[in-house]
Amino acid sequence: MMRKFLAARPLLAMLLLVLLASPLARAQELLADVQVSAQNVTITDPSLVTQMQNDIRNLLNTQAFSNLTYQPGERIRLKMIIGITAIPQPGTYVCTMRLISTRPVYGTGYETNLISIVDRGFNFNYSQQNPLSYSANSFTSNLASLLGFYANLVIGLDRDSFARLGGTPYYEQARTVVNYTANQTQTNEPDEGWRGGGSRERHWLLDNITDPQLEAFRTGLYGYYRQGMDIFIEKPEDARASVMLALTGVQKAALTRPGTLFVRAFFDAKADEITNIFRTSSDAQLKQQLVSMLTEVDPTNSAKYQTLLR
Image (cartoon, rainbow, N blue to C red; front, side, top):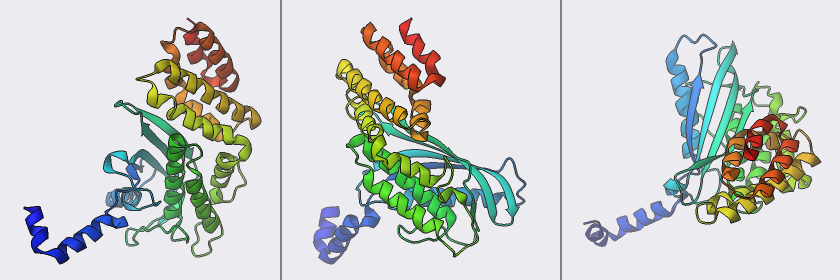
């Protein structure tokens, strides 16, 4: 039926093909679940929170943040949990935000966390009457900049897990967002998280992930996921060897720059998973080496790693 329709109407067929080839028809990169909580504040109109949540979700799920082509089943899953902690004046929201993004493991139904991070200065102005829009190269609103920054960060980490240093273009775009937002004078939305003075600010996050001295962390991501987790079902021993080498890279980054937030976030998300990867290994020496290394760089989770020696 469709073939007959297209044959009978060549102009419509051509228009349809153009539409299907256009960026608008391309599946977007992200598949986001957004939750906005107002439990700690008083909001007289509950529909405001619902619309805010929907606007944020729609921007993340419909905005193209790159030139990559993602099929629907390939989109990066992420969860963004926003808690409103104060409303200093009508339309201004002081929030915390937790971001968790996941990555499927090849050949399995398992999804592994790529990042779990908290932004305690996720502050913005919002109005139900003003549409939320994002621009890659210019400021539209602080909320749009926050979403664009974290979207590019998530895409960058995802690409790093599939190709060595594959996330570089997306970190560069995130830095563009930092720069134009930190210097914007269009609105009265002061946000110190863009200015790079503190250890958890967004400028500092990018400085860490792109620092050549910490490159071993990013190459470690590729080794951990693509050369390790993705082949675990078929070649578990080879996968463990790749994960061990990747963790050596993460260790190098941790020792080079103690207290690096991405390293801390990596182990917070991965301690249980790493333990499970090596639990069934019959190589006692490998387990001992792993536990010694991880106890040094991740003492917080040392009790979990020690179970590998029992």
